[in-house]
Image (cartoon, rainbow, N blue to C red):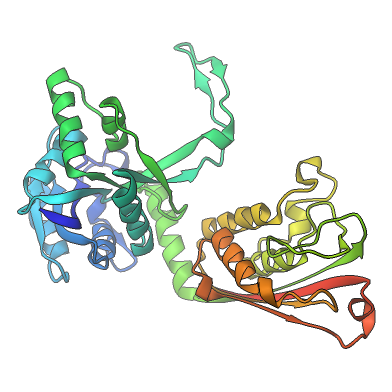
Amino acid sequence: MNLEKFGAVVVAAGNSTRMGGKVSKVLAPLGGKPLLRWSLEALCACEEIGQLVLVCREEDSEAAAAVARGLPKPVTLALGGRERQESVLSGISALTEDWDYLLIHDGARPLVTPELIRRVCADTLRYGASAAAVKAKDTCKLIDSSGFVKETPPREWLMSVQTPQAFKRDLYLYAARRAVDSGLGYTDDCQLIEAAGGRVHLTEGEYRNLKVTTPEDLLAAEAYLQRKVVGTMRVGTGYDVHRLTEGRKLILGGVEIPYEKGLLGHSDADVLTHAVADALLGAAALGDIGKLFPDTDPRYAGIDSLKLLSTVCEGVRAAGFSISNIDVTLVAQQPKVAPYIQQMRENLAVACGIDTERVSVKATTEEGLGFTGEGLGMAASAVCLLE
């Protein structure tokens, strides 16, 4: 057995009926190379992946072998079955070693990133089963057989599941045997595990990780890649000011700091976090926090600004950007915040989904000048780089 290594199965055996069906969608050109090649390259970039098996249709096997040629890791071919579950088991059977863990990915998700694959692998090592998923953007309805609405689940409970999905090998094979013995088939590997009584942990996915099912999806993927090439980097700046007042907590970078006054605002008035949020929104051309979280909306009364920042970062990622780094400066006469800066950096990094090393927090005074120097308020300015 191979501890903490994954045997990866890439499923690319669908009939592509919604793409016309004549040519497999995974062989369609995307960004100058076959769509399938993008997923294979992302998996090869992860040291967690010990071996790759590509499951394809028999009529696509020669073309699939050509797509997999020249990769840094060898790729074994396997033939797909009538249903997806059969195709996955065919891929597992083609693994030449008994890897402790299995990772399954749809070849029709070409925009998967090595970072997402690593997150799913890390969660699987911790929980035994994990899948990439993103929060549902639309309100969803449960309907009856006549098409009438039965129930509207709260949107915050709903996640759209993606691949990669990864599982402890023994758990997956146990669940697969149960399904075969029961004559049941599942189109989602998480569902297979759930049916066997297992629990699957959902890992934060990426909205860019779309599944190419229709010609429109292929155009969307192409547009994303074109935008990534043309607009490689974006710089944004943010600036915010809040008045100091008695009777309020002083929250800076998500840290409550002991002081006789706090900042006045509709939310927790975290001026540092607000500046960072505005810099990110500016770089992605998505507006500003006043537009997204108006102070006339009671939902945001007293809200933790780190939650607002997390929402901003979701929008930035959905627009196709990743955060390279953030630099923010607090302008305040009092109190001294040096003891809290490291915690601020960590809080901002968690909210943004990036490493702490990518976040810089500094503080300065204005030597008694202006409203900050007179202790009437605080200001913060931020700059960020998106890729």
